[in-house]
Amino acid sequence: MAKAGLHPEWYPEAKVYCNGEVVMTVGSTKPELHVDVWSGNHPFFTGTQKIIDTEGRVERFLRKYGMMEGGQGTPDPKKK
Image (cartoon, rainbow, N blue to C red; front, top):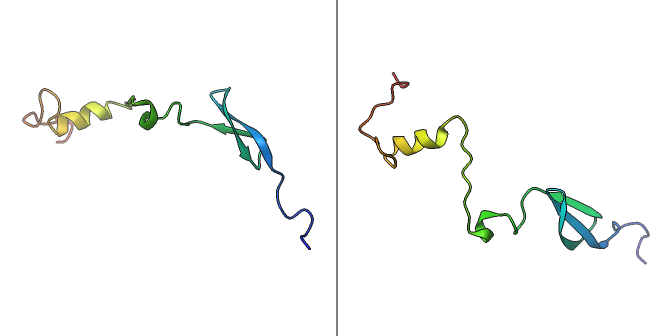
């Protein structure tokens, strides 16, 4: 006594796209899935690390916590 039209349509061969190319097929309620990150390009699975630097934030952090030459002994002239 199940109601008709209760469950969404199932696509057993849904294509997963990353950067415009098919990277895998999975079962889904949508025929296509567009993702930015998947196991093939995620740093945890690939072992690589990518630091995105915006306006020198990484260098400022490294300088502040003494991880770069010129470390903590050098005052930041912008602070005053």
